[in-house]
Image (cartoon, rainbow, N blue to C red; front, side):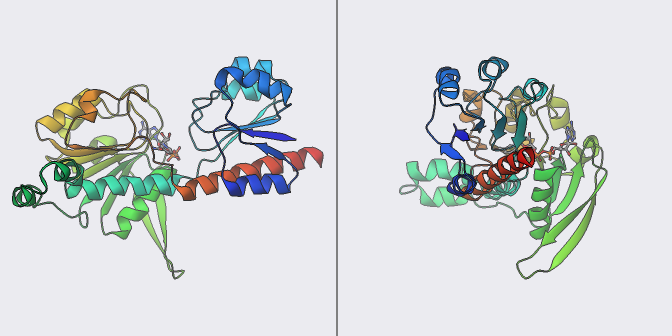
Length: 320
Ligand code: NAD
């Protein structure tokens, strides 16, 4: 049985698969070469991240395929329904990167309240000649402790964000289409466990009451935060988006940053990936990262292991 991990897979994932008798190929095959390669090599399992596209045409062209594995959450790059209709297994690893994304939210938040996004731009330029001015400029930051964090989307990542927020003494409010009340379980290194119930509230209320707002929803048909929502927010609110581009109206965000309504934003995802709008990239009040929420070593390890375990389990069930 051959597995093509076209966008890479962790060493632990490869070892698990090899120990179970799979041959794992990690050569990156160009998208247009995939039908030929999959057929010639009789590949039964293809693992991808977001780069490789698995569309209907590829599925039709490669009858040897049995499993499509997505390392990560979103499956926009796979024709999932079509594959399942053709009796292929389509699997992903939805929980493996939740805490990585949550930590990135706080990288942007901690950086935001101390202006690091801007001082990192200016220290290399004038740090040696205008140190005192810069010091004055970036003094007067604030602390997260005691502030209110509004989490839109209390699913896997939203809940991980809530854990960190509670851990550093923030008040957490959440809003979710489907989740009413949720119990956040904080697990400490010494086996102590603390449960904190969080009741969700309508998004309109969350918007008015939050000092910082972070989004953790799937792709939406229209932005959840646009001009009307920004107008209702507290003055000087901070906004973080690590979910999907398009969930925030970027034009309205730039305007809200310009008039001071929003004091800073942290963005990991963009409307026009992989060519984000220049107005966003050049805005000095935005802390930027290139869609790296899930891209930690630990998450990639967990993703590889989870994919391997699911693939092995599917084969075991089929041969049982
Ligand atoms: P999840 O499905 O566990 O949670 C999403 C939650 O959003 C659900 O509880 C759902 O009810 C809620 N929701 C959906 N639409 C809503 C709306 N309009 N208003 C309020 N709540 C709404 O998903 P997750 O694993 O937490 O992932 C969240 C997002 O993070 C996804 O968009 C995913 O693609 C993205 N993500 C980004 C990265 C990254 O690298 N930046 C990595 C992984 C996931």
